[in-house]
Length: 316
Image 1 (tube, one colour):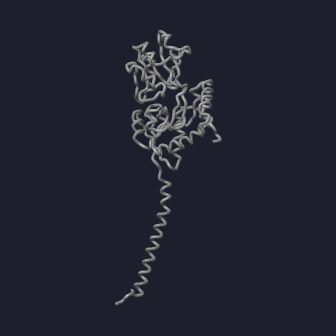
Image 2: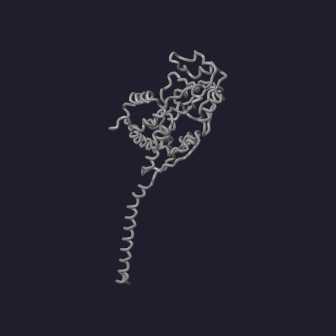
């Protein structure tokens, strides 16, 4: 009985063993080298929600600081995130109610131009300021009589919204549906009898509300000055009133899912915003909607209220 293989068999066995060793070595080496490469090219999908309204139709073409304040800045952020090797940003057009549902149910969602409210902070995260608007005003059009004097304080401001409709219970105010007016005005709206409020939704709600005001289908409209653009004939007939104690500006923010990925996105958005806030274009983007005096007031407001924030210090 042979205890060892014959020389030819031994040679074949050795050759086969060497082949297997080389094959394993090459395979292991290739796998080891490919893993970091795959990690590098694997991107995290981000659903960037854009409300489906006419103002957002050409959002990604807003490449000029004079086109639209929030949309221009939003486009800058989207383009910068798309350049990042870690994000796959996909634009998804949705209705306003869908924004809330998606933000609160998914961990990879962001949306721009949102007011930072306590209710929204329960299910989402907010960035540093995206843009600033002159706060909402109460508008009235082509009225034959003045508002009762008891509605105003010594500064000529409306004391509060609820008092208007307690004094004029048959009149109505048009407001945009499914949006926040900021904490202060949101609370005031809750004090108004629902019968006095007409909520307008849809993708043309901004234009529709102004049209309803001019056609006397509502008596008042609560809106941002940026959204009320009367023609030369309408201007002399349009009244606007400031609400007492309302913040001078509505601050818009980027808003992302309350998740680990959402926090990562907010951090990266804030880094981009820190650079944008230092550019001339940031103020130029607001200039179209502010007079020189108002723009100077905005700059003073920024310096006074956000002086310790990094985005106001270019050295940081």
